Image (cartoon, rainbow, N blue to C red; front, side, top):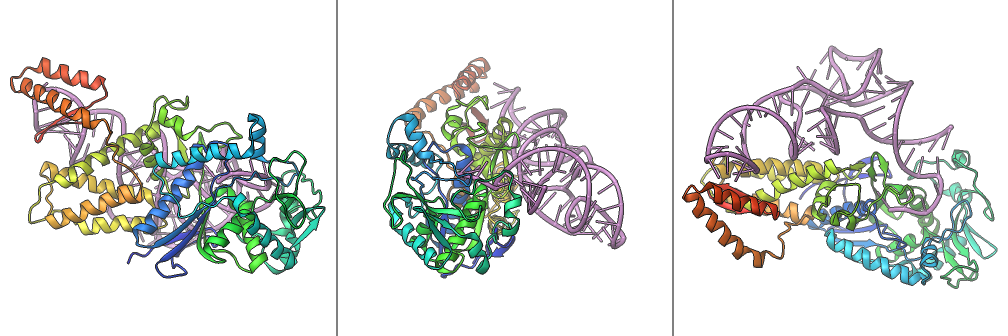
Length: 484
RNA sequence: GGUGCUGUGGCCGAGUGGCUGAGGCACAGCUCUGCAAAAGCUGGUACACCGGUUCGAUUCCGGUCAGCACCUCCA
């Protein structure tokens, strides 16, 4: 059994992973708010947790992976302004909130397919769990950690911090919270400025409204995750993940709500994926430095001079650790594209290698090094580095500079393919048109081979150049000519 | 202002108290090849700066500078 360690944001340490129930893992990841199309930065987080999910599956765990969909706009911020993002988008387009949600949900599903994300076990939505949210709010009130004001309910941070540690995740101290803030916050109805809304009384212009014991209104932002994680994973589960920017206040408040309602931190391990940067700055909607996942594939963003496939983008992201920020640039993507091609070429070569009765390199320990990389807090960059070590051996065997036994070849083939396709979630990108193109290419290359036999280099180069213009690269080797 | 993170060779990006200074891309030379591509081999002595601890620090500690993130919606 492989020994997996995971960095826990809660403790700041890498810890050996021990699931609560042997062989099974409960994981909750904060999903998107569907008020716009997710941009590439959003996708990075989902791709990273897809990697986590995939590796847990690879290790044989039965994983219940819950990722929510926020389809209710968050109604307030601490400045007391109304910022129902979904409602705002709906008003702009003069449609109903649900239309916005459906539109971007379809988009999100499409993006997951294109970027090869495995579907979670359950994708619950906020609006289908209003009742559960209300019940948890009632429990928090019962326990004395929330109060009702004029149809709204607020979490009482000061009362809570008498019994629990508010700030346990983010390292913030309640006493210092107020002065620590950048700007003056309107306290409004709240007793203490750090209190946050669990339920917010409806405004006349709200497009979505629900009934509650406190009157018509909307749930607060943080409560949906508490309600849905509890419902599907229980009070106490293994892993809770999300983007780094959710650490405070969202995850801190989730912990407070869980402790405030049923008395314990919901998750053993809190994982935070770091941000995607553009020129050293976080990609975000408000900065305007974002591009959409489809734009990069279609080559329609002016940040880069050409298009890159979803696989290349994914490979690029896998070359950085999930806890590090990563900077996108055309140069970096171009480098990844080439490197990924080399990896793919080697994988094509791998099953065709000739075997002998002796291996000149240690394939089993090479394979173990793949596991070692991932066991160390999902270190995909190291995994890829070790895969490239294998690539060199594969090419050497192909050139006759290394040899490999049948047993080693079988092991290496199975594990490399598993790590590249199943764990990293990369695809070989065989284009569907090959069915029709293949016979044509066979013919063309046969004609070129004849020309080469006759040392008719003019014809042979003419064919190669023409194909190159069509985007088809021809490579001659001792074994024959192949194309891609 | 508070809290935290980062600063690695031309670019991207791991990692470590000393051992052959990950890996990818780029570049140069060589081998192979009709040429090219691919592949293999070889090469460039990096770790922001200043102190300290140490036999020895890029890695630990302190400070400086720079950048970033969170403290407001945020993946």
